[in-house]
Image 1 (tube, rainbow, N blue to C red):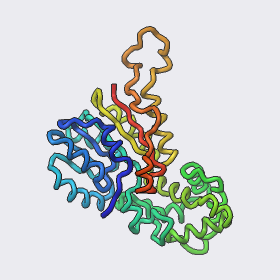
Image 2: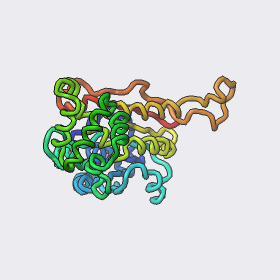
Image 3: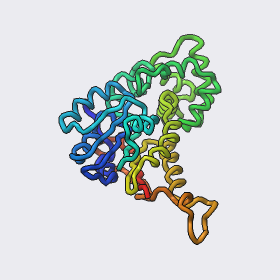
Image 4: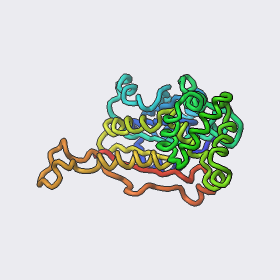
Length: 306
């Protein structure tokens, strides 16, 4: 199974790995990043999270060939702190989030791709009940319009939502190609081929199905609280909504609280918790862009716990 980890070298270097450290891969996927971490922590421990059982089965086979000092946890990363505490882990040396959908998920019949006919699904965790089919066929016009606008940043969200509601009254919308055709008919061929709104709509539905942005807002402050002094948090995002959340949270925790800004001595509880390792995001190299076009929108941000 082929999977290409975007910005892998930059992310691994950003973690500043120590051989006896404790590290967390919040998004195990197909073990691209976890493999590199495990190779470097001969005396440490890796905890890896994923909600995709298929990815876990695959990654288990990959990681056990490298070492046995790891534990895979079948869980959404939003429950990271709780799950680690259950295992007696209160502090770690580094945490990595790679927020992209993995290549195998895009390439297999999981409903993530608008370029092939697949069942509308988009669930990262196949045990979850809400799927893309449910969103498209059961959400109200207002819900669809708001999701498309907020999560897809699509200008013609209202037209597309209205068309979906109209078409599903005739018959259920079951496949990705049916949805793509509806999007095209809603906005017209000229707009469709110029801006490709199907990308935005599929992104929006995927975010809704997997609660991606809400989970990210919740987990990042908890991840920061788990870091030891000098510990690193590395986050790779793939669209502007994710990156905006990461940037805002990192900014909040890296600045002095406004209530005490300007005082000659800052009380400890108001001091910054982190420092920005890179103030501007790290982007894929020209070489990586040639090798993998899916890396084009990737941005890497790194912070260190003070």
